[in-house]
Image (cartoon, rainbow, N blue to C red):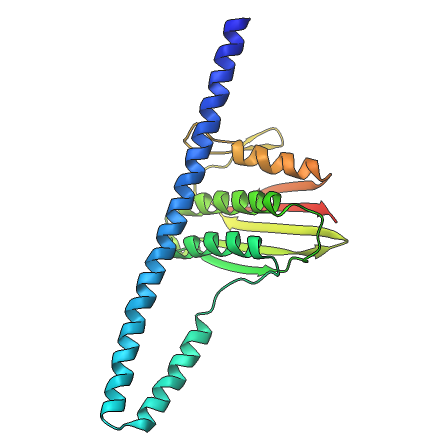
Length: 224
């Protein structure tokens, strides 16, 4: 019995370590994506400065004014930052969504989070992060990039915090009875689903998962 407990403990430790390594890898991917965007912005900023300097040197104030107007409209149109009203949730949403877009996944998001909710921001970030990680992994198994999509909605519904993530799915969806099983190949498979379920239980919440015709949807409701 002692040996079995030891081996079981080692197996759990290995799965936790693998899960933590997966989180670190995802975080590194997100940071690298942000750095890539920053390098692109720096390059564009340099080009804009050169163009404006050229107009100014030639005394083309009218052209310079037009260019500034176009630049202002472009900057407004590329402001895709999600602003929910909660800084931590803004951070997790924007990092995940930015990474999804860089992977050719079409993302549509609408999110509003009250500032005085009695739910831990860390718990919310765990739920949202896991849902979006799973959605991205499912989308990336879809070979046709034009059919990849993630739809996110976060808001208040019947005095509960309602979180909905719907995404396209490529490949097989595994299910045991009424329970969905992660299709990840790593030893950490299923830990994200377990953590999400435990947090929902912690707040006496509710999780509903459904799939139909290549689409997977998860709804989470947490009482306020």
